[in-house]
Image 1 (tube, rainbow, N blue to C red):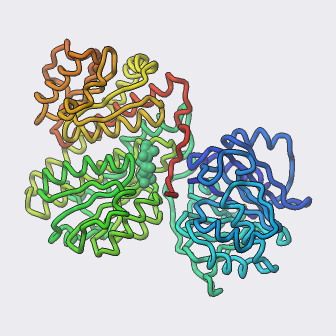
Image 2 (cartoon, rainbow, N blue to C red):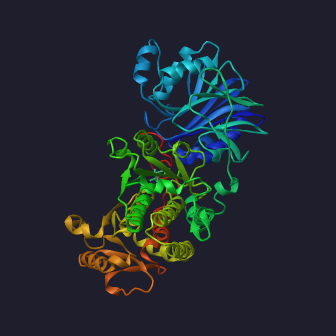
Image 3 (cartoon, protein in one colour):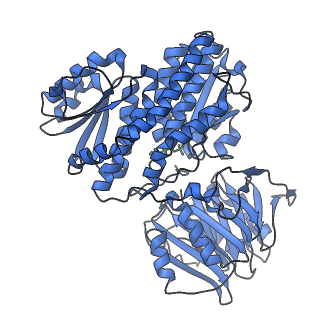
Length: 604
Ligand code: M6R
């Protein structure tokens, strides 16, 4: 959570910082602030709300300077207020922080005597610590401070008596940095730097980064120079803009066919999935006796689809685990377990901790990750990158469908390697995957219809999604998408489970989105739909084209093209995303920045 940017160079720092914060806003938007080193000293401006609110405040205050730091906050420690907004200043120190300082009380007790704090944050106590330790040598101060600080952090620090230099250090929380002709940059992620360069590096942990106007360098805690490992992104600024769409979410929904192509095609050789280029050997699929898929939120829902596919086609037990639970449950895994972690950002703290847990138990780890060079990608034994491009909207859309595509490719390869499917079946699978990808356009063509029908959802307070098998996994995803951006209470239920309690909540007019794309359980689904219909539910039914449906069982009917059961999730997901999107739009909400949320959950 929280977006960080630091700059030292030849431009007006305030402009660079604010523009960067706009790109990072999806990481948190409770408050925002910047601090710039100017002729008058370090000057800060902070505002409650998003970067727009900060920009308003900046209109009243003009200051010049070419070095500074900026922050957009997702509140953890201390409420949403201007005093709790970053940057925090204590003595000669002004800093911004992403993460949580766990031993802030102990630090306060040891170093706080006679001092007064203005905020309720752990960050201000960290600033106090840096100030207490500072004796004119920033690197020495940082080294001492990191030996005391416990928790996770990414800090960018400016010292009152050291002009034009930003010092940075991190543990767990991400920071990337780059050099460009305009100066030296650091940020929480590369989207904030892309306007200046496509080449960047991830700041290694336990390394101090020094940003100067004409250079930047890294040194480890023993003072040794560190050479950064450079990375390159193959997308540019336009990929992280709205490009005429009213919201990032709808733009990203529309980008899915391309994202799928970019994810699938590089892995296809002779019409077969092939992971040679990413050095994922077939040997890791042999000799394993279970798979665990570990992730959070939408990524976990993609994992639920993966479980159905893998168990059906590879006949190996697959458990889908919520990362925040898995990490604390001493899971029964060993060197015969393949642990697949899934994460768009590659920085989700619980998924990362689960990965580390899996590695400590000698499991084989494979990450499905969208952000290149992210911590999860770097720490996994193997990485299968999805190529969705930058996903900015908090509600994940294109990242989800490409995660499913990656899982389909893995399933195909594993089915082939394990001898469960022969080469001809796999080649046929690839044809079907292409059809599923093309079906995205057919779902998108229903946008106007969905815009219209979601008018009936906008006044509702409760809603249910039901489905069986893969459609239950899709129900979970449809439900999270709807509730996170429309604030309508919704629940996903395995359709056969309704009768065991939940059906008592179905009364006249309660919407039920019934997903019935799975031929294998279609008749059972129809019975479940009749049950809710008989109790007055307003049913929005999703089926494959061409199936026989009695009009009396639904109020609205959406279809996806005819496909075998395993290939329906992608076009179905697009319909569910559009339902969530337009419901939120009709309710007049901030689609891209839903309340209380942030895109990247890097704190527990
Ligand atoms: O970056 P990750 O994929 O690890 O993020 C996991 C979840 O936080 C994320 O999918 C979240 O559930 C989305 N906001 C849902 O749209």
